[in-house]
Image 1 (cartoon, helix red, strand yellow):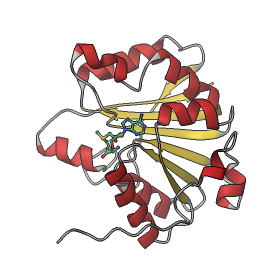
Image 2 (cartoon, rainbow, N blue to C red; image 1 turned 90 degrees about the horizontal axis):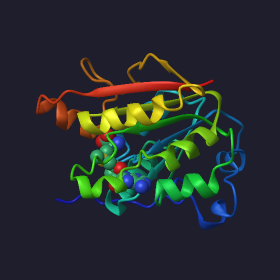
Image 3 (cartoon, rainbow, N blue to C red; image 1 turned 180 degrees about the vertical axis):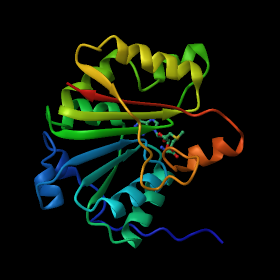
Length: 207
Ligand SMILES: C[S@@+](CC[C@H](N)C(=O)[O-])C[C@H]1O[C@@H](n2cnc3c(N)ncnc32)[C@H](O)[C@@H]1O
């Protein structure tokens, strides 16, 4: 039987929250470090990380309606007041609604690789979006990436290496929900590990 998904209005960001730059202090009702997950899927990372780190405010950005609704339902069931979700295009939201130096960490796990060459322009990691991520990170903030796609990983590494004056590589530590042998414990990581795919990870820190 299909799972009945509830809406939980307190979890979803509202239109008025997007009038200009998001005021994280207002939407979470407190001042706290802000972590943003881009492409949060069914919310597995957010739920595990937010339960382990109640001192952090988490925002998940997810484009696909069914994943977004699933994640809202999960966060609502767990009654996690430190997680908000929004269904929108992450590139547009970050460019328009996230203030400079306001984010402590971006998590980007298994971004769509768009493997066909003619589709590469749809990949999230390009110069424009990377500049926006850097603008939004506070000094000392982190950008964490995991992917199974070797060629996309190489592109991401190159895009970040071109900014090595502003970034330094740091250790990629496993997340709270990761089991033995996992890095992030997301649904896609688990699926790909079952297929014996190699997982590539990278973490950088804004200088
Ligand atoms: C391969 S899935 C990975 C999901 C999850 N991070 C995981 O590891 O299980 C990529 C997700 O990113 C979402 N996505 C792709 N482009 C996006 C965008 N521009 N803005 C927001 N979400 C996006 C997709 O809808 C999909 O849920």
